[in-house]
Image (cartoon, rainbow over the protein chains, first blue to last red):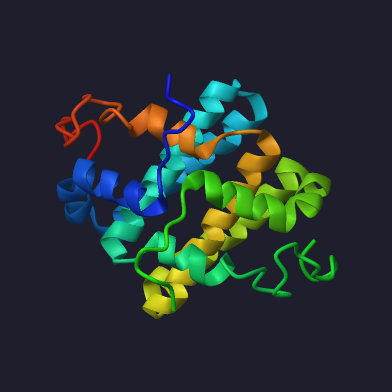
Length: 106
Length: 106
Protein backbone atom coordinates (compact mmCIF):
# COMPACT_ATOMS: atom_id res chain seq x y z
CA UNK A 1 0.00 0.00 0.00
CA UNK A 2 2.77 2.45 0.91
CA UNK A 3 5.52 3.65 -1.38
CA UNK A 4 8.85 2.14 -0.38
CA UNK A 5 10.23 5.63 0.15
CA UNK A 6 7.58 6.67 2.68
CA UNK A 7 9.33 7.19 5.99
CA UNK A 8 8.32 8.09 9.52
CA UNK A 9 10.72 9.53 12.07
CA UNK A 10 10.16 8.99 15.77
CA UNK A 11 9.38 12.71 16.04
CA UNK A 12 6.75 12.39 13.30
CA UNK A 13 5.27 9.38 15.08
CA UNK A 14 4.84 11.45 18.25
CA UNK A 15 3.36 14.35 16.26
CA UNK A 16 0.93 12.05 14.44
CA UNK A 17 -0.31 10.52 17.67
CA UNK A 18 -0.39 13.95 19.36
CA UNK A 19 -2.60 15.33 16.61
CA UNK A 20 -4.85 12.27 16.54
CA UNK A 21 -5.36 11.66 20.24
CA UNK A 22 -3.93 14.45 22.41
CA UNK A 23 -7.22 15.68 23.88
CA UNK A 24 -8.11 12.17 25.06
CA UNK A 25 -4.57 11.39 26.16
CA UNK A 26 -4.29 14.42 28.41
CA UNK A 27 -7.58 13.56 30.13
CA UNK A 28 -6.47 9.96 30.69
CA UNK A 29 -2.99 10.76 31.99
CA UNK A 30 0.07 8.52 32.21
CA UNK A 31 -1.39 5.90 34.55
CA UNK A 32 -4.55 5.27 32.55
CA UNK A 33 -2.60 5.28 29.31
CA UNK A 34 -0.12 2.73 30.64
CA UNK A 35 -2.97 0.26 31.10
CA UNK A 36 -3.76 0.55 27.38
CA UNK A 37 -0.10 0.02 26.52
CA UNK A 38 -0.09 -3.18 28.60
CA UNK A 39 -3.20 -4.46 26.86
CA UNK A 40 -1.54 -3.96 23.49
CA UNK A 41 1.70 -5.59 24.66
CA UNK A 42 -0.38 -8.65 25.58
CA UNK A 43 -2.00 -8.66 22.16
CA UNK A 44 1.46 -8.40 20.57
CA UNK A 45 2.65 -11.44 22.55
CA UNK A 46 -0.39 -13.44 21.42
CA UNK A 47 0.08 -12.39 17.82
CA UNK A 48 3.79 -13.31 17.82
CA UNK A 49 2.72 -16.82 18.81
CA UNK A 50 -0.23 -17.36 16.51
CA UNK A 51 -0.93 -14.30 14.35
CA UNK A 52 -0.34 -13.70 10.68
CA UNK A 53 2.49 -11.30 9.74
CA UNK A 54 -0.14 -8.62 8.97
CA UNK A 55 -1.80 -9.08 12.36
CA UNK A 56 1.56 -8.98 14.14
CA UNK A 57 2.55 -5.82 12.27
CA UNK A 58 -0.70 -4.14 13.37
CA UNK A 59 -0.02 -5.09 17.00
CA UNK A 60 3.48 -3.60 16.79
CA UNK A 61 1.88 -0.42 15.44
CA UNK A 62 -0.52 -0.29 18.38
CA UNK A 63 2.28 -0.75 20.92
CA UNK A 64 4.28 2.05 19.26
CA UNK A 65 1.21 4.30 19.21
CA UNK A 66 0.56 3.86 22.94
CA UNK A 67 4.25 4.26 23.72
CA UNK A 68 4.19 7.53 21.77
CA UNK A 69 1.08 8.58 23.67
CA UNK A 70 2.75 8.04 27.04
CA UNK A 71 5.84 9.90 25.85
CA UNK A 72 3.62 12.79 24.74
CA UNK A 73 1.83 12.96 28.09
CA UNK A 74 5.13 12.67 29.99
CA UNK A 75 6.86 15.25 27.77
CA UNK A 76 9.61 12.91 26.53
CA UNK A 77 11.24 13.29 23.07
CA UNK A 78 11.57 9.67 21.87
CA UNK A 79 13.87 10.46 18.96
CA UNK A 80 16.32 12.36 21.15
CA UNK A 81 16.09 9.61 23.80
CA UNK A 82 17.09 6.86 21.35
CA UNK A 83 19.82 8.92 19.68
CA UNK A 84 21.35 9.83 23.03
CA UNK A 85 21.32 6.26 24.39
CA UNK A 86 22.06 4.22 21.24
CA UNK A 87 23.10 6.70 18.53
CA UNK A 88 26.82 6.50 19.26
CA UNK A 89 27.10 2.82 20.13
CA UNK A 90 25.95 0.15 22.56
CA UNK A 91 25.38 1.71 26.02
CA UNK A 92 27.25 -1.26 27.49
CA UNK A 93 30.45 -1.48 25.45
CA UNK A 94 30.33 1.62 23.26
CA UNK A 95 30.73 -0.32 20.01
CA UNK A 96 28.39 0.03 17.03
CA UNK A 97 28.39 -3.79 16.86
CA UNK A 98 27.88 -4.84 20.46
CA UNK A 99 30.77 -6.76 21.99
CA UNK A 100 29.40 -6.96 25.56
CA UNK A 101 30.05 -10.19 27.41
CA UNK A 102 27.04 -12.43 26.78
CA UNK A 103 26.97 -13.29 30.49
CA UNK A 104 26.03 -9.67 31.18
CA UNK A 105 23.66 -9.03 28.29
CA UNK A 106 22.84 -12.28 26.50
CA UNK B 1 24.06 16.79 22.91
CA UNK B 2 22.28 16.21 19.59
CA UNK B 3 21.62 18.77 16.92
CA UNK B 4 17.92 19.62 16.79
CA UNK B 5 17.82 18.50 13.17
CA UNK B 6 19.12 14.97 13.89
CA UNK B 7 16.31 12.59 13.06
CA UNK B 8 15.73 8.85 13.26
CA UNK B 9 13.14 7.04 11.20
CA UNK B 10 11.58 3.82 12.45
CA UNK B 11 13.43 2.02 9.65
CA UNK B 12 16.73 3.53 10.82
CA UNK B 13 15.94 2.48 14.40
CA UNK B 14 15.50 -1.11 13.24
CA UNK B 15 18.71 -0.95 11.17
CA UNK B 16 20.68 0.53 14.07
CA UNK B 17 19.54 -2.20 16.45
CA UNK B 18 20.04 -4.85 13.76
CA UNK B 19 23.64 -3.79 13.26
CA UNK B 20 24.34 -3.49 16.98
CA UNK B 21 22.72 -6.67 18.26
CA UNK B 22 21.56 -8.98 15.47
CA UNK B 23 23.93 -11.88 16.18
CA UNK B 24 22.78 -12.01 19.82
CA UNK B 25 19.13 -11.40 18.93
CA UNK B 26 18.94 -14.28 16.50
CA UNK B 27 20.40 -16.68 19.06
CA UNK B 28 17.93 -15.50 21.73
CA UNK B 29 14.83 -15.62 19.53
CA UNK B 30 11.47 -13.92 20.04
CA UNK B 31 10.56 -15.57 23.33
CA UNK B 32 13.80 -14.80 25.12
CA UNK B 33 13.81 -11.28 23.74
CA UNK B 34 10.25 -10.64 24.91
CA UNK B 35 11.40 -11.22 28.50
CA UNK B 36 13.93 -8.40 28.10
CA UNK B 37 11.24 -6.13 26.67
CA UNK B 38 9.07 -6.81 29.71
CA UNK B 39 11.90 -6.02 32.09
CA UNK B 40 12.39 -2.66 30.36
CA UNK B 41 8.66 -1.93 30.39
CA UNK B 42 8.75 -2.44 34.16
CA UNK B 43 11.68 -0.06 34.48
CA UNK B 44 9.80 2.48 32.36
CA UNK B 45 6.78 2.25 34.69
CA UNK B 46 9.00 2.81 37.74
CA UNK B 47 10.76 5.74 36.08
CA UNK B 48 7.47 7.40 35.09
CA UNK B 49 6.56 7.36 38.78
CA UNK B 50 9.81 8.47 40.36
CA UNK B 51 12.54 9.01 37.75
CA UNK B 52 14.07 12.20 36.42
CA UNK B 53 13.15 13.22 32.85
CA UNK B 54 16.59 12.01 31.70
CA UNK B 55 16.11 8.63 33.37
CA UNK B 56 12.61 8.28 31.92
CA UNK B 57 13.90 9.17 28.44
CA UNK B 58 16.56 6.45 28.73
CA UNK B 59 13.91 3.89 29.71
CA UNK B 60 11.77 4.84 26.70
CA UNK B 61 14.86 4.31 24.54
CA UNK B 62 15.40 0.86 26.00
CA UNK B 63 11.77 -0.15 25.40
CA UNK B 64 12.02 1.05 21.79
CA UNK B 65 15.31 -0.82 21.32
CA UNK B 66 13.86 -4.11 22.54
CA UNK B 67 10.70 -3.59 20.51
CA UNK B 68 12.88 -3.04 17.43
CA UNK B 69 14.83 -6.19 18.30
CA UNK B 70 11.67 -8.29 18.43
CA UNK B 71 10.46 -6.78 15.17
CA UNK B 72 13.82 -7.63 13.59
CA UNK B 73 13.70 -11.24 14.77
CA UNK B 74 10.04 -11.56 13.69
CA UNK B 75 10.67 -9.92 10.32
CA UNK B 76 8.25 -7.03 10.84
CA UNK B 77 8.76 -3.57 9.26
CA UNK B 78 7.76 -1.16 12.04
CA UNK B 79 7.62 1.91 9.84
CA UNK B 80 5.32 0.27 7.33
CA UNK B 81 3.20 -1.15 10.17
CA UNK B 82 2.59 2.29 11.72
CA UNK B 83 1.99 4.00 8.38
CA UNK B 84 -0.52 1.36 7.32
CA UNK B 85 -2.45 1.41 10.61
CA UNK B 86 -2.27 5.11 11.58
CA UNK B 87 -0.89 6.97 8.55
CA UNK B 88 -4.26 7.74 6.99
CA UNK B 89 -6.24 8.41 10.18
CA UNK B 90 -7.50 6.80 13.38
CA UNK B 91 -8.14 3.07 12.80
CA UNK B 92 -11.43 3.49 14.66
CA UNK B 93 -13.06 6.52 13.01
CA UNK B 94 -10.75 7.29 10.08
CA UNK B 95 -10.24 10.91 11.12
CA UNK B 96 -6.80 12.51 11.55
CA UNK B 97 -8.13 13.97 14.81
CA UNK B 98 -9.86 11.03 16.46
CA UNK B 99 -13.59 11.42 16.96
CA UNK B 100 -14.29 7.92 18.28
CA UNK B 101 -16.89 7.62 21.02
CA UNK B 102 -15.00 7.86 24.31
CA UNK B 103 -17.03 4.90 25.60
CA UNK B 104 -15.29 2.72 23.03
CA UNK B 105 -11.77 4.12 23.24
CA UNK B 106 -11.46 6.49 26.18
